[in-house]
Length: 434
Image (cartoon, rainbow, N blue to C red):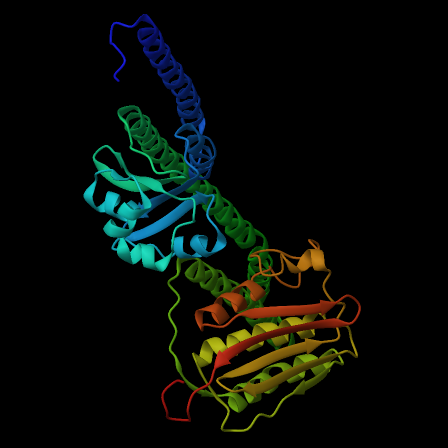
């Protein structure tokens, strides 16, 4: 029997129900205001994602959340909450064409509301077959994130129980999506501005470093050239003395030329404009050239120089001039910093599709705190050390990486260091690269 609509008790209950709904709406509105305030204060994309997934998910009473953005054709997952590890891995594979609710919202620009697990299975059968939702996941909504008419991402919210999304549910979720889109757009601007400012600071510092090197390290050889040239203008200089001054001038000129070449290589590597003339290079020829170049230097300092004699069929795919430069930097450094009567070894070990190069020395070794700076440009462990300007290892590392390899170092203080890198082998003296 229906309750009479003029029953005072019925009206009192209905009034109390309406008041309770209003209290709940007011409470949710207050919490949403707190979320939008936090979003307005977020200064980075990471901070926006944290606010949305921690506080925003709770406001709409969801059990799980997923936030992603678009970068051209690429989908970047900014964060997720509440998913098991299997689903977390699957989420990272999402693309623009993936048949899931959040990507449909992004493609169409309209919200997707799924009120039950059965409806999800019907609308998104492929996604359901790939990752069966958690047993207690019964409903979800996916919101496109649009700012200024531009699609910038998507927000997916999962609910623990099947539910008919009412007007207030939809309104609060859409308000959250709008606030998220605005915050993401603003945070991207902040991040880009910070990145530009950081790049400008790095460029300014690099220019200062280059100017410092030019001012300090070019001044000495230039001074020698000026002084010897002035002395050579004197007609009374004996012939033997003139030859000696000419040799000094040539050494200073070569030193300046080497420094300028290093600076240019550094700038090319930094700008990504270094070109390689890749050829099939016989490793034994590189070793022979290294021996001719560094044997006199090693003997002068009473250092035992041991160079491997690889088989003539050991061939790598590389730029021969840059290859000589890499080996020269590493072997030259080893001889430079190894004490007299020490030992420097160049090893070449073919290992299947690659050839491993190792330069081993019995020098003082490198403390762990210094290894992390070893490949920094213009860095030297001892600032008073004038045996170089700190570019050799940075250039060697850049050249090796340009060849597709990596430069590694192992060192024990008091025992010595080992620098090693790999290059791809070639099929033969005239064959293509492997």
